[in-house]
Length: 173
View (cartoon, rainbow, N blue to C red):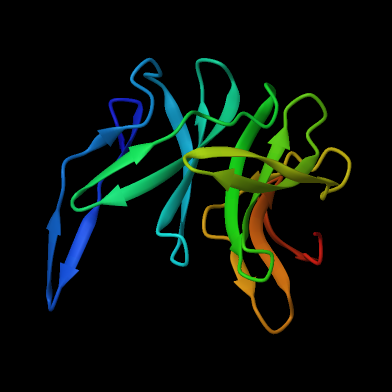
């Protein structure tokens, strides 16, 4: 959720046909302006990855969370580049890694990176590089998808108020 500008997460526990909600956790209490939030759950690791724009610093921040009961704790923020915007996440099951897409505000190209983690710390695994064309002003939507049989990820994104889809093979190790 985004409450009063701060990015917040809430853990929901499903039991039968009911859901109970834990307490909201603020991702960054010093950041009162968060936007463009995306999140993925990595079931094999019982971890959550959340990406959001810290509008105070004009950069994407990505955090790794560990749910426990009705709460969640987050590690330090990973910042792909200071001039990043509009994050999108997808979990690549074959690589067993999250993939982050974002727009670089200095040139308006879309870029992607595979991420790796240890404990509660995220870091770059591999820089996939530029993934959209010149001046696309890519605005990646949340909810990227991974296709197991095709070994591809796909994101929808907006370019000049026109919806587009980016699909790429992820055999990046």
